[in-house]
Length: 255
Image 1 (cartoon, helix red, strand yellow):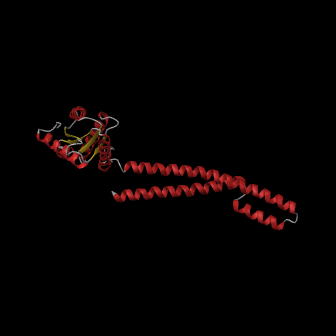
Image 2 (cartoon, helix red, strand yellow):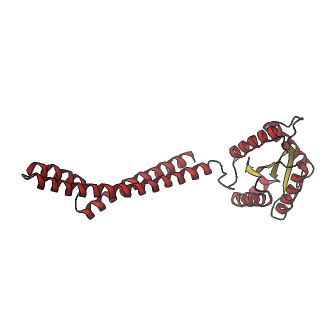
Image 3 (cartoon, helix red, strand yellow):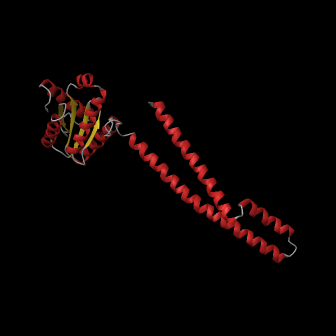
């Protein structure tokens, strides 16, 4: 996997370098052909005329003519290459944005990966402490997912993971965050939201998933300025314990 990504990046850079070389040479050839005077030829003509012309007036006239041709070529090349350079910078920026985005997203479900969602949780915890905001998280786990995979195959299991990700994205708000933290586990962050409100949202998610091929269990934990659930690890641990209680209660439930 790592080698494939490395080869892909090398290939992208080779394409970019080839594009720059091709465009630069094409611009120079095109402008030189249109003006019928190459930059190097124009420079040689200036020196030659200065040496060979006996009349100073004719020599100056020849020099100005060649300078005009030389300047015209340079202006055209400069303008065209500037446009090409701007396009190249835009192209590289697009590659950077895509690579940056891919580095934060889970490749299968296209939601945040573990690294990104934990960074989001750290940020929201800081905001909750600094501004005394509410913060609630939920951990969702698919019930009997390994059994489902062994019976239906990994392709069908991947389809279920993507479907659940879409259901969660549909039910949560724009300010909420969701990421995949494990094989069949999802972490949902609800900034400035009480535990009861989160429970109602999670219940909608649970019911909609239940209407499909699988069921899920969920554990909810709320940040508290005065209690032990203040750090990122303790908040996740508390939600994980509640998820375990939901599993013990028969699954397809929320605790």
